[in-house]
Image (cartoon, one colour):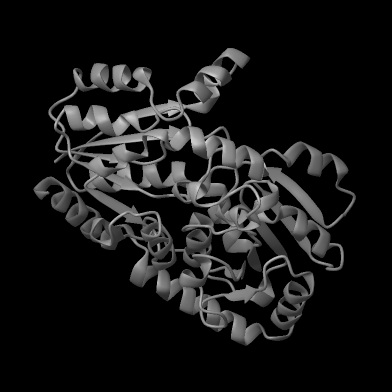
Length: 372
């Protein structure tokens, strides 16, 4: 099968970028041909003129059609196109040009941008769906521009959501439930020497450094906790937080390759995932499951579909310092129970989140899209 991947890479690399590469490796391993057409914010949004042009072409872009048509001339006939992130460079015209070339389309709904138009400026619930630059006003404005050609979404044959929670949300945007299939994220099987929690001596955060990810909340809470915390990741708050850090137990390690994150997770007492909004399917949690690391996460959104409190992870109330501190105190007094939770999470990874299992799901989705 000849598969085309289309994706818009972010300024700060994140889980969506990782998923695209993991799926490419998985498909190549199973004998398929994978062709990528990628656009990069770092390369295309540099000047003020670039920003204005991107804004004007948010819903429909002739440049998008030219890029895809030119690239399709260089590669063999495509059986199915898998579209990932299209914001902000691709726009909805990506669906039109693929349809004109008679290529069936599958799209993974990695984030909740399709939900944005359902909210008005006074509805603070919008923040839970991942606001643009943490601003309700900017999100409201951007969503109105972006969705002027939303009707082109009807061209998509199959949508992939990453959890039951996400599927229920997207059905509210008028996407037919019959078009949506749940396919969770995955990682390649990789086995670690799982260490007991009492033999580890630091905690980890590994995500973008921005407010909605809960980094400010975590740092404020950590002032009352006497354990080393390693912060991995880049983002708009990185320089400011690192410069203002006066806590001798907190270390800012910046963006690191996946291999480094895996290694550090394996040595960490626990991963803290303090998100304040509806995450979709965080790759970091799956890495922790695979690495034999306890996950301590906010009880919000799709996280509740991944973690069962006290079984394969620990959940605390989002943005609630007392709740998080109570959970951390419980962990410090219950090593045996925590080691059991870690083992359950590792077994959960093997059962639900490996590339072998995910391959069958993805190929069935592709074949369904082609038949339609």
